[in-house]
Amino acid sequence: MEMSPPEPPGQEQQISLLSLDRRMTVMETKFDLDRESRTKFEHGVAAQLTTLNNNLSSMRDENTLKKGTIRGIVLVFGFFGSSAGAGLIMLLKHLAAGAS
Image 1 (cartoon, rainbow, N blue to C red):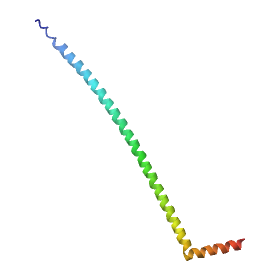
Image 2 (image 1 turned 45 degrees about the horizontal axis):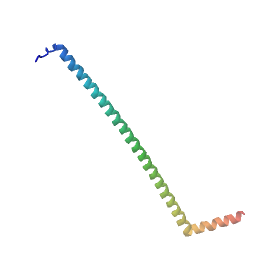
Image 3 (image 1 turned 180 degrees about the vertical axis):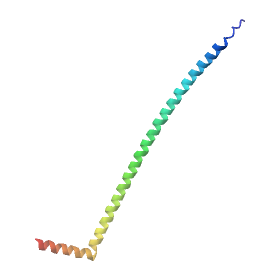
Image 4 (image 1 turned 90 degrees about the vertical axis):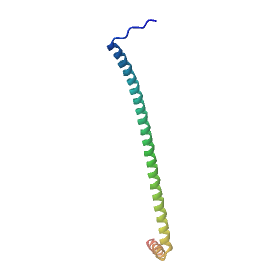
């Protein structure tokens, strides 16, 4: 059994460095892909959160508008149901009849 002669010291190191460089390139590529996919995911989540926030704000505004409208209707009916409202209605009828 014959053993091959050992490689010269510099050449052995170059092969190791070349192999290491390839491995590092592969790992860097993998890390870049992971970073890109993570960034896409983060942007997607941020867009969804923005949409949800806008929807919530819109619903809050609609709810406030509805409450204000209902409050206004209740106040108007309350006013017209009171004696002051009845007096105002009579005054408006009198003015309308006098203007005709």
